[in-house]
Image: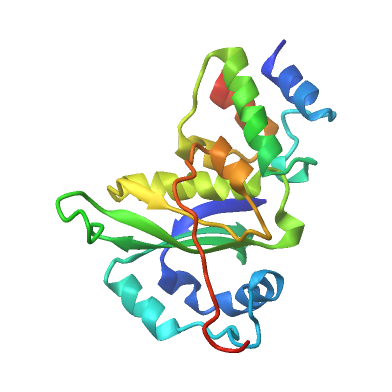
Length: 154
Length: 65
């Protein structure tokens, strides 16, 4: 049976490459310029600093999904506020997109972030893989539009 | 309607308490809509952590009972 849980980045670092590759294939933009090449050293360093929050879905021991956030002790604009979470990436293998598993990963993420004292979380999704409706049902508010532009020839 | 009947009705599937959520034809939107429907029916809310750990229809029935 598939489970959702909070884990450390260190716990998944050794096994994330396979699923990250599938994630990249499905969702990455500008693939010629942005080859999948996870900076494991940086992730592990941030994890050691307590700046990562990782939620996983596992089928037995197999990693089948993740939601990865960065944690800042406070937003740099609001020094006296509190910890904030910024989404890094999330993904669930196609065969597991059923039974509400995706939503349950985000619910576990919220539980874990609250337990850490995070006061606000920021999430985004790709325009071509729009999960706005799911986030709305989870209680997220649309607050920003995010833009990107290639500054070199792709 | 019992919670089990609500689940069967809302998802239009034959289910028992042993049915695993992962075996149901239900994406995340449908799952969340189902939870909202059950919450409205029972007048009960369940916290995020408990919802995240739901694995079977029986788990849903017990959480909202």
